[in-house]
Length: 395
Ligand SMILES: *Cc1c(COP(=O)(O)O)cnc(C)c1O
Image (cartoon, rainbow, N blue to C red; front, side, top):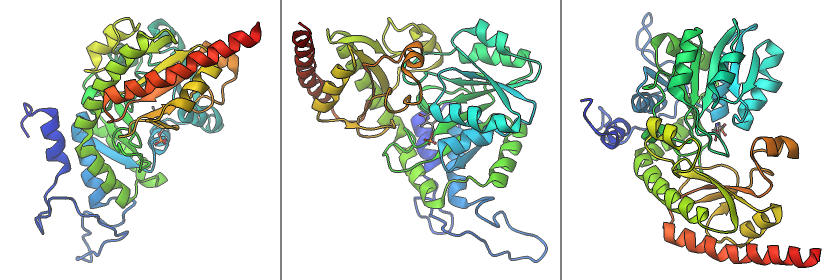
């Protein structure tokens, strides 16, 4: 397809594959674990679904094209994709990883990979000096997640790639928050892009899935070997659901991001809000850098209220968002990181990571932004009351 085609056109071209046999406008769900071989000596393209399946292939080809890579891979979850990627490393190897990396990635590094001799150092990846200092002769990977969760800190992908190349390391980027609609790490020189496709790519809170896209054939071959060897492949029906979700990714995430920008500005102007974390706000410390490497602030933001009581009052009085873990869906999702994604940190560790006891994270869905803002305004009335009650009882 011509390079000049817009992303939204490419998205549809790649996800609506007409079936050559029947003309069906959608890829059939090939619910078959095995495939008949017509020739005793020469087997066909497919033999066993762990190794390859036409429905999963369509999804893998779509994500590879959208991220601008050589080959894509669909896994049973984001963590299956991330864990498989880390198994490119061997005993004695080392990875440099962000301090505020996704909790599941933290867990696999600290509690599993270490047992097999794969070592890691946690650093602030927004500080390039700190990253460089952590690189050792046995470092094989620098891992990036930008913007980070839940404080939306921005890491310079190109600068990390340069550092990595100078030290003969690979760069892996978890692109879950931005998706290829807004940020394409392979174009910036990264070697592997990872996704929790459970989030924006599925978009409907109905599938758990992971995706990986390799820049080079060399890495793609290794990931394919591991995917088949470990077997954490995405199921056929879920592959189809993900293709379906992917078709509307562009319109969904753009609409949500537009609303997120308005909501971030609304929060920034509210006296109840101590801080707003959103890379689309001009006063966000990573705003300029983010604007260079991504085309939107995205659909996730965090905001800090005075304390836990304020956060509780707010959550108890909003009517539109669901209160839940996860993000990237048609419905807005409000979560409380201190008791959800970051519950394993103690209070001191949380404060250090910038996760105050009043911090809430909002993944903006497809409700009308004005309705969401009205809902939040109404909930703030109770936040004020709660603070007044606290003050009174202290007297
Ligand atoms: C959710 C998430 C993951 C893990 O993905 P699962 O699909 O839940 O296994 C990894 N990285 C980020 C940034 C996430 O938000």
